[in-house]
Length: 389
Image 1: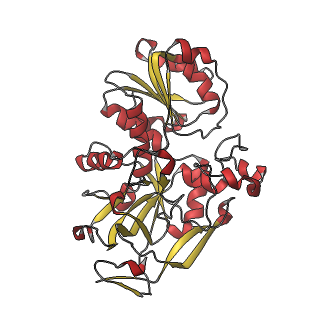
Image 2: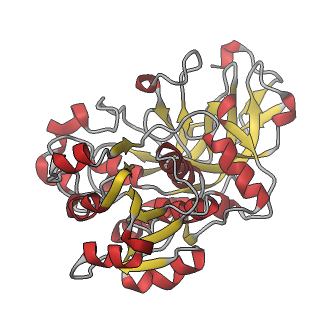
Image 3: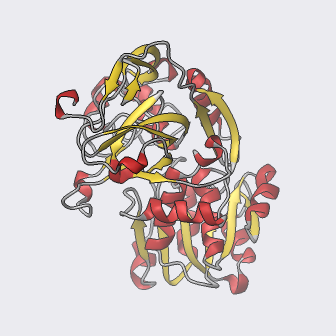
């Protein structure tokens, strides 16, 4: 028999806006697993841009500037609710955010392999439709459409639970899920090949540091663009060269850094003016792949570059089935490594998010969770019957 507390500590997002919309609660109901579900005792959970974007309603069409400028608040949060999430659908409040969950399988629903109980696990944050996982319109994201890991416990379908065997700490493992599955999908969809030249923008962030490592694993040449002070860390991760994002002539600097001046792939998380500077550099048949636009979503572009160079533009949001499993396999093989900048206790999530928004870090910021609870009020038989759902 498994025992869970009736209530848990959790950080609730209670509306769109600033960090004042994050509310600490010690009486949030502990989730109970239904058929095919697993409750995870959360040990650590990473922060990502999607947490900030959702809180500030940056996804709304009326917002036109960067993700760290709190522009949604200025534009009027209430009027933006209808399209203030990545799906374009209203968010249900309160919501527990947090996608990069690492913890222990604490309770299993009916039909779940009993061998999973008490295993150390990571979570695939993309909850895809069981009948048609390739139907992107039905995809849900942990911490957005369903409650996530900024709490002592979270509940996910068993198919999203990936056991992991690693000597890395919980906080280190919590740097991987969102950033590395996103970067792996970006590079995979762009079909990055050996000896191709890949330009990574926003290279010091979670996706950027992941893309450097994953591109090098494909034997590509990597040109990283980031703040000059972060260059030595990116070179240590495997970047072949690092260009200061504030350089006077970014286009010329990138071409000079590329062998023979050829650019095959741009992996972009920045958008805005960087898009206009870099895309014209792509060689014929080149690929531009993007998962974000932290400096702003609106760009100017000459379509003749797309048409007459046979370019491919690739958006990356939903990661396909099996991506998280590949990332965990690489973790266990030691093929990729975490880039952990700092940890904060869960109750200091607001402080952690403010540090995240400043963008002075390299890699990822993670909150750690104390699963100690005074209340032990839910006794779960094995397996859990439907009356508990």
